Every structure is written in structure tokens, then in C-alpha cells.
Figure 1 (cartoon, rainbow, N blue to C red):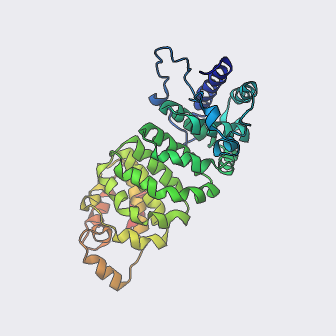
Figure 2: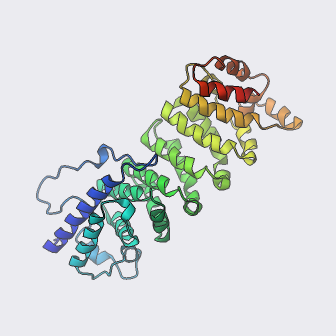
Figure 3: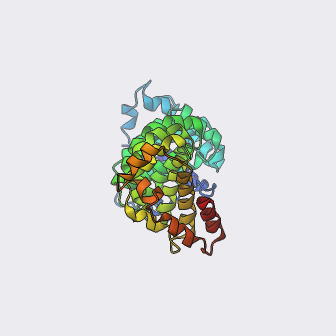
Length: 349
């Protein structure tokens, strides 16, 4: 049974997560969407345990001195409950994720690892993700070993937790040192894209993370096998997902070392149909940027001959003289959007 001091501690942790999860919701294009999943669950019966960070009564017994939990918490295993309450209250009083100190982040990481309920893990991940909108917090999470800890939840059984894990890692990846740690999770992120329902929040969150990780070419070699998957998404996904997919493809195609892999990738022939007046301007602009990067690549004669023999490769569909891309680009010169026309003119040069 949890004594009255434990209940007080848990109540303060609940307040911490509730305040901080909402505090960073307005930070830039990388803000995290809290959504309905973070609404409070209705509690029934007399469990005696308040909602919030699910620190069970037996946690005191399982946390051993020198263990990972003890290191993450930054607290002595036998620390008084009153001291914990004061630490939590200081975090609550800070009001903004930008004011978090390393010891506050330690506390959140500890709470993440000891939370048994899905909604609690989501709240902690949202709080950490909002805090990661600030560069100092990005460094602090890495230095505390939090990147690896957070990434464990990419395989959480709850889809909502996986989404918030991706969102938190997305903000944390706005840091070159963090990218060097996070790049090892690219295969796992690609697997989430491939196995998740099309147009799901999981796919979108995963693509956003890949967009950040592909901004610098240091991670591009880990994405060589993803070209076919990304190109396939273009023809089956919603506008939002198309835009996010194209952001990754534009990043990859800006690297000359990736071009051989891109032009050889198998692609649905219907990709060329996206170059159309009916396609949304936001999609067209990025599609044309991708095509412009491809057009800047010139294959040797032997390579071009080999690529022409492959009916379903991207080179044959978009770059070969037999492709209908050129005639479609000419039609787009009459597009009502000025930016689209400018992109078309650049590709046709």
C-alpha cells in the first residue's frame, strides 16, 4: 500500500506532467500535437492510486543503488518523500519547458521508465518533446543518456506512445550531435513506416523524423534502401504525407552520392501522373524540386543504356526520353500558381 507521503508525491508528479505537457505546445513548426490521447482517463473504483506517473508502491524495492533508474533519477534510493515533492514542485513552478534544469529532465526520464500506464508515458514524452524545442535541453537529454532511453519506446505496444516517441525524437534531432546518436534508429523508423497503416499518425511522425535526419548527408547512406518505399508512398498517401515524403526525397536527391540509388529504384509508373494541374501546389512545388535535382544528374552512356532496359526504374519513368514527363512539364507552364511555374521553368532549362 502507498502511504500518505507516496500519494502526495504521486499527486505532485501528476501536476508536473499536466502543466509541462501543455506548456510547450506553441513552439515553432516542431511543436508537438497533444491531441485527444492526453485527455485524462476516467478513474473508477477505489484503487487508492491517483492518475499521473505510475510509480507503484513496489518501485522502492526494485530500484537498486547504482542501477540505471537510480542514475536517471539523480535521487538517492532512500531519499525522503518530502525532498522529492520539493523537487517536483520546483519543476511545476518553472511553468515553461525552456526553464527545465538537468535534474528536472532526469526526473522526467526516471518517470518515463517507471510509468506502467500508456497515458502517463505519453504525457512524459510530450513534456520531453516540448522541452527539446530548446537547444540546451537537447544537449541535456543526450548527456543524460536520454536519447537511447526515449528511443526504446519506438517498440512500445501502444501506437500512441510510439507516435509521441517519434515526435520527441524529431525535436531532439534538431541537433547534429543528437543526430549522430539517433541515426542508428533509422532502420527501425523505416520499419514503422512500412508496417503502419497508410496515412496514419505513425507514418507522418516517422517521416518528420526522417526529414530532420536527412537534412545533413551524414545519414543518407542509411536511407539507400528506403527509396522504393518513399516513392511508393507518393502514389497512395494523402497530401500531408506526400509533402513530408517529398521533403525526405528532396534532401536525399541533393546529395550526388545518392543519385545512383535513386534513379535505379523501382517506382510505380503512376508517379509521373502527379505532374498534373490537379495536384496540390504544395505537393507540386516539392515534386518539381525533386525532379530538378534528378535532371541535374547526367549518367554515363553505359549506365543510361542499362537503366533504359529496366522498365520500372525511376530513370525510365521520369528521366528517359521516352518518359511523358517533358510534355507534362510543358502543360504546367500554364499553372495559376507563380511558384509552380517558376519551378517548372527551372526544370525545363
